[in-house]
Image (cartoon, rainbow, N blue to C red; front, side):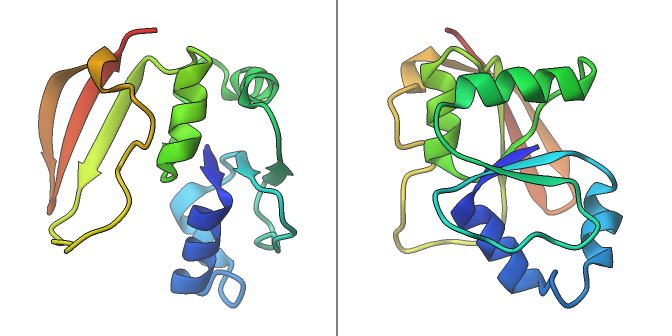
Length: 137
């Protein structure tokens, strides 16, 4: 799993994970996590978290080796997803739509990969709609 600093900080703050690190284990178990950041952030005690920065390609190679051919999950961070797309390292995007209406905000994916995405399935997961797109290099 990989995420940007903003997503990681949001999860820490909103779920109070430094006060209750068992939540991380309950949700993610021992899943290795890479947080892309240029700042110093606290690690959740007991979690397998690595803080990295720079080009996503060499980190992706490390992630693939750790994944044992399972999917690599990019959580939040449209810009981070865009960096993986720029390097041709995406083959699928699953967007989970939650039942919240925002009056404005940042685009989901700030890079132009829309023309390379094809909707392949729509599934319901309780209150979420999961949209799966294939991504052409």
